[in-house]
Image (cartoon, rainbow, N blue to C red; front, top):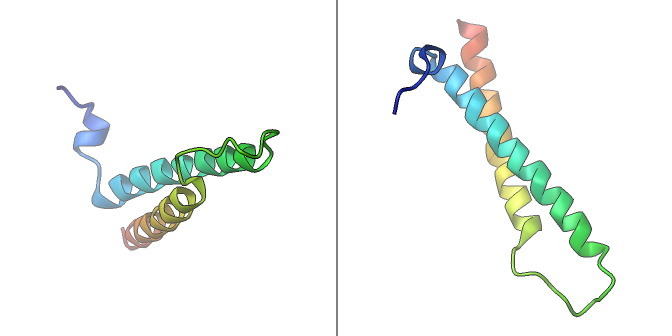
Length: 76
């Protein structure tokens, strides 16, 4: 698979930032799904996915990776 040059030659901080942004988007998606699960009409139709836990874990990991990326970007 051919990767674009901006990914192949990106710094570690940029890669951390990309992964952190991806994890935060997964966290936002899981927050939306958890909101929909809490507002369901039929209380007995409980879903299989633990959206709250997924959102918390991916949110924490995404923020940590973005913090590492910001330190790397500031140091140059």
